[in-house]
Image (cartoon, rainbow, N blue to C red; front, side, top):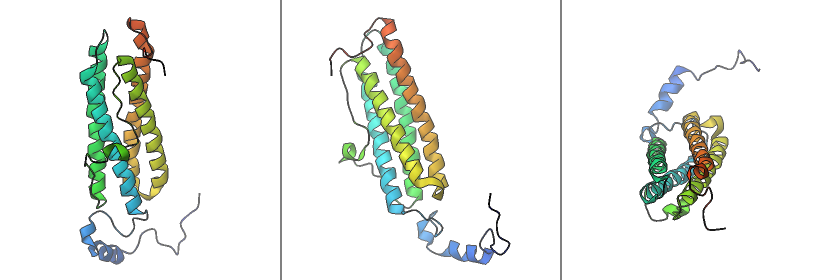
Length: 194
């Protein structure tokens, strides 16, 4: 591990830090030490926001439209996930504003900004499958954004890592539902072939 040179201070001198803090105060938390392309980060975060909003809507639709012998317990899981996805959307929107951006909640183009799709099949097993697919998309998307951000925006990185952990939990929940579904009296796979 490299050691800090004695001639290079760890921090800027306090007068420099104080002076920089007074510059561009309208930017809020975004200081000159923010080295990422802020517009790119805002675009990625708005796409993540759209993805979370589409996931909320999909899970809510599945919650209300679920039917069949196992519908009550599966619908409850869908509702729990919808509420957690809404929490993710709120975190992302808050971070966008902290980066002096504008969260895009417009329904116009929501599905094109989202990485996940809004798919509402009729069969409960197919709903579970679509939710697992969407969670897997979110997992890959968040990993890519985290890799892009790296240690150059640790606040965004930590937020996304927390969301990623929950998306992985959601995927595991959907996988378990798919595996257990056929054991409870209903077909494990959707009736229609693909």
